[in-house]
Image 1 (cartoon, one colour):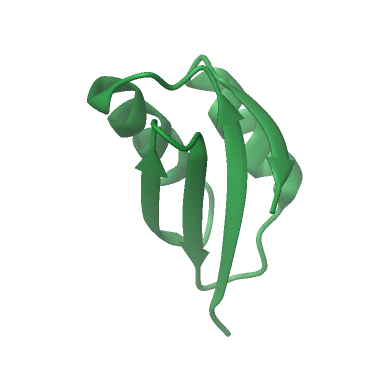
Image 2 (cartoon, rainbow, N blue to C red):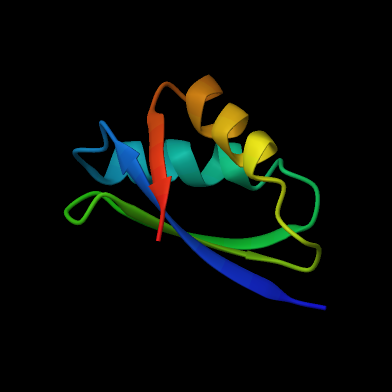
Length: 71
């Protein structure tokens, strides 16, 4: 089963921020692909497992940003 979710992340302002958030999210079990867009403040996460939103929130926080919601 594959799933995709879109989250809003506060604090991204550049390509470096996008890469930092993406790298953090790729450590979440099951995550296979991450696309971060600083301009929109959105992060799209593809996973081969059901996404654990707590793990996603933790990974974003550890990267130095704040997950503000799920679209």
